[in-house]
Image 1 (tube, rainbow, N blue to C red):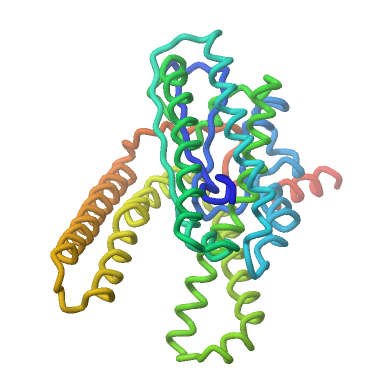
Image 2 (cartoon, rainbow, N blue to C red; image 1 turned 180 degrees about the horizontal axis):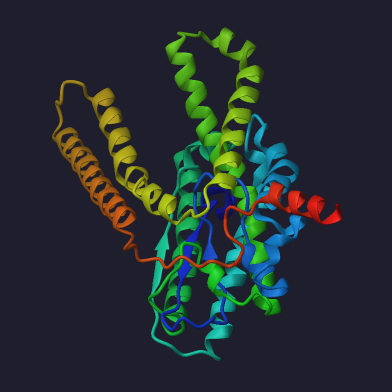
Amino acid sequence: MSASQVVPEYDVRFVTSTGETPGPCSVQDSDDSSPSPNRPKVFASLYGSDYCLHWFMHRDFIIVTVSLLLILPMCFSRKIDFLKYPSMFGVFAALYLVLLVVVQNVASWQQSALVPVQCHVSSVPIYSCLDDRRLSTFAKSVLSAIVLTAALYTVAGVFGYLTFGRGVASDVLELYDARQPLVLIGILAMALKIITTYPILTFCGRTAVDDLYGQVRSLDGEAKRKGELVRRTTIVSIWFSTSVVLACLVPNISIVIRIIGSLAATFIFVFPGLCLLFVTVKLDAMYSFARTKWRLTTAVLCVALGMFVFGQVLTMSLMDAISGQGRAADVQLCTVPRITRLFSYFTRSTTSDL
């Protein structure tokens, strides 16, 4: 089991404070629900600010096409172990981008900041795909992933701190000049990484919904096996369609990212705390041992801390969204108004022909 199978997504954001377009590229692979790697900066850098007037470069067309052709076929798989091969590409993409930060740093020395975010929502389903499910085997996979991630963050943090500034857009890749070959390769690499990340997150959501459905309907093992294919297809279709529609309709995902970011507290503190709580009660329901009380105390503290962080971050995000004073400065890459969508292009073309 490689590190890429344990840590399937990264979120490392580098930003500029000068308002100018910096050279280096960033990594942004958040665990949001958007199924398409939206990379309009490539088109804006190569074709100009009116790129979205061309239907084949329009955001909605790119989202739908990439999602249907590349992402959807991987979402229907019953297991995710086949993704271990494409997921390894994500590790090499992250290594490349860290190397890019180091190389580009030589040409640009500015005061900067780096903000890393990381989630491990896929660890449980990945553990279920292990051939050797001993704790030692899983611990080796987790530790190797942690060491690799820590090394990436440390190197990117040190050199990124010397290069980038404090102002950040909702998608920091919008700030970079994709005409640079090294940056363009990095953007495309992370776009492909996102394509392999979405099926993993869909698997987690699909499994949770399927288990909840089985509990509500009180299905036994045989009944679950018989209707598994139909449920899997239905859940994935609804999940995927909803994600695509939202990705096309939401013009600016910065607010969504800030609000969903508060859920990281549940992944980091609440869920592990609840797992520790239930396992402790199951092993010693009478609280006979002193270590049981310590484990219960630790579990309660984790849950309480997670709920506090979740509430604080969510409240601050909502306040920023309402007041319009968020940290991220929204970058409008295409100068065409948002109301000008794909159907407007075809309407305009038909009118001009007449």
